[in-house]
Image (cartoon, rainbow over all chains, first blue to last red; front, side, top):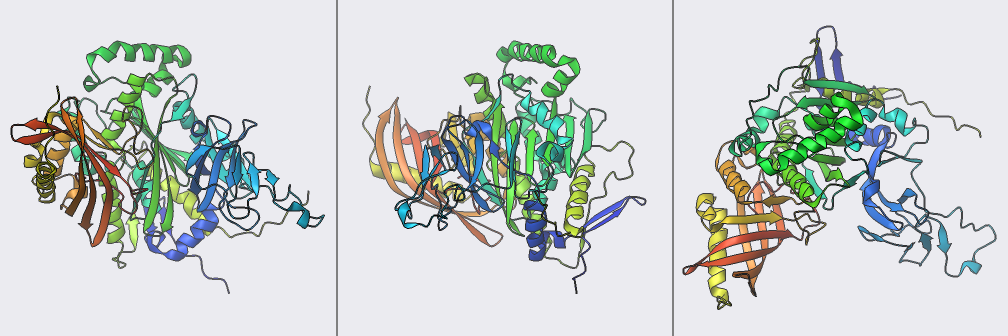
Amino acid sequence: MEKATPRYIIDDRERGIFRVNRRAFIDPECLEEERRRIFDRCWIYVGHESEVPHPGDYRSREVAGRPVILVRGDDGAVRVLLNTCTHRGAFVCRQRTGNAKTFQCPYHAWTFNNCGQLVGVPGEESYSDAFSRDELALASPAQVSSYRGFVFACFDRNTESLPDYLAGAREYLDLVADQSEIGMKVVPGEQSYSARANWKLLVENSYDGYHGLPTHQRYFSFLGDIGIDVRSRNLSRPPHQIPLDLGNGHAVVEYQSAWGRPIAHWVPPFGEHRKAHFEETRRRFEERFGKERAWRICETSRNLGIFPNLVINDIMAITIRTFFPVSPDYMQVNAWALAPVDESAEDSALRLDNFLTFLGPGGFATPDDVEMLESCQRGFRNREVEWSDISRGMKREHPAITDELQMRAFWRRWNQLMTEPQVRRARRAA
Amino acid sequence: MSTTLPSRQEVEDFLYREAALLDEWRLEEWQEMMTDDAVYQVPPTDVPEGDARNTLFIIADDSVRLRSRVKQLLGKSAWAENPPSRTRRLITNVRILGEQDGCVLVTANFAVHRMRYESVDTYIGRYHYKLVRSGNDFRIRERRAILDNEALRPHGKISFIL
């Protein structure tokens, strides 16, 4: 007999009540289901094309539990290769980053070129006629695709195409990608950290407008100290702040913020000498995109969550953040800074400086976020309290970013994938 | 103009005093050990020799940010350190590398243990100091904590002064 599907969420739209069962954060069986139903089925962010700019450039990293190589082949194409020798399993790439014509397995010296093809097998004459180099090329995820430079992999060939999957999130990736006429690049330096908390707590936190003032009090007092008037903008008034369900579990909050934005929202700490340059940048955006879109790019901040585990926050700088569960109460986090390729050295330094005021494991905000997530996770040991409440703003006609619409968009999609009957997919005949 | 290099013992005494002030959360006194233009940096674990102007660091404080960091840590709303963690610093292998632009260049190894909520996280690495003479004492002009840890795992954060 099949086990009854656990009830993970209460979604009472009539009464305006939304709750998540805390088993979703603590139950090892739930994590196993997530691996199968979410991480093995959804499009998962691997890296940015700018991280491998030249033929042969590669980065090895772990994605959805798989050690993979993000590599640009000599043919110029960016690929994701599974880092395991097709012979007996060893890593063919043992460096974090570099440039290589070939990847040679150190175990028996099978050699693959940077497009993944098997090009060398010592003593190949010892194999039968059935031995095929083609069959033994390095494997790839079932699907690999990129959108505006962001490279994703999907381990299920039946999942919809990447553009369809991204749905409404494409518009928000465009607002980031359009910040340069030449292209965007990941800046050197990876923030590799962790949290002793369930991965979904970081999803919720990354676009949670409600926690800003209490959790990040010290950040706002720092802004005050350096001469930014944090009350100059009414942070709680629509329409300059919008939470949106972007479909397929993706969501965003867009709002005007007190902090400066190195792309083109000047604040006094940036210095008078930069003012004219910021105005010039904004004029160029207006020429390219018109006043309204230029205003959005320059003035508004956006916290974007792409289901299940990619966050792109375009706030006081742009961070790409991805995270994977190791256990129900522990995740690994990687974060990078994204910047226009053509930014001057001085502007780039300002951007990185602005990034560090808030973001990252040594910033004035992220450590307190990690602290709160870890605190929630410890709180969940009180199993008597079964549900978390995510109802805020549910009955409001115009929800605010301090409401919890974003989280509900995530959880509805999550619940759908976790509870829908799993149809054994018939293998389609060619 | 070249100055006479200090003895290792003088430098060790200074670094041990610094470690004690940090472990005891006497951060205002610690701040007095810094010059007015002091810099405090923690490079990312994958680019330990990077330059903060073109590399995303974990921490790259100028003197304004460093003063703010201390103020925050002594206030109430730096939640990651309220209540404050216990730390214990082991400073070893102190070497005086030479002199540059009026600064004494010093390196030392560290193991900094942070205890909180029954976890012990150990930060391993080396310091690079630029010290300037101040009477019979020193002031810190640059303090760089270079981690050997390949990632902040399971540490998760650097919420105290490393």
